[in-house]
Amino acid sequence: MLKGSIPPHVDPRKLADRAATLEGGWPITQFPRLCEQLVSDAGDVRARLDFGRDEQGLIVMRGELEVEVQMVCQRCLEPATLPVHSEFVYAVLREGAAQDSVPKGYDALEVGEEPLDLLELIEDELLLALPIVPTHDPDACQHPAGFAAAPEPSVNEVSRSNPFDVLAQLKRDPNV
Image 1: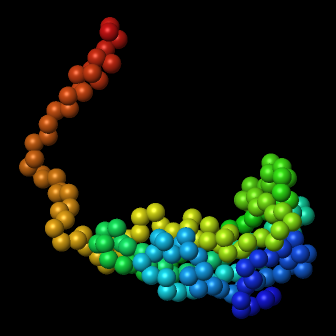
Image 2: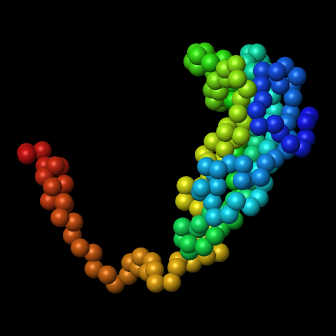
Image 3: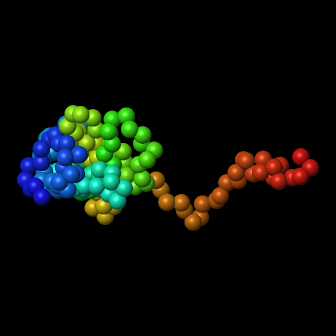
């Protein structure tokens, strides 16, 4: 197991032959596309990558990523610190290999003769793991000043008839 700095480029086939595990991290600033989504680029991405072979002899890379990011809360429009966790399993294939043979639960990762760009792969996984609508916990924030939330329906409110009720009746009538 290698701890500390994970190299930005690796050959997953060689690492799988050694059943290697890489642990370490990078500063968030190493991931420019991720930083575009954030309020602050402070913090570190922690990663654990296990390389090996499965029962079928496929080269497999299992990964786990953790980071805390700051994004704009879409409820109160203030910065929110959110934990991001991602787990993935890739079957490493040669470029142009048939992906039909990849078992369920694996994502296909085509790798040519060039080393695999780990930073790009990890950035992709982090972008997929970001919340679609980042928000604080509902108890932790309120809507911004001047924003009126939708009013609760009143008990005394008179319900209006639906103009499409006539069409529903016509649809049910077998003579039409």
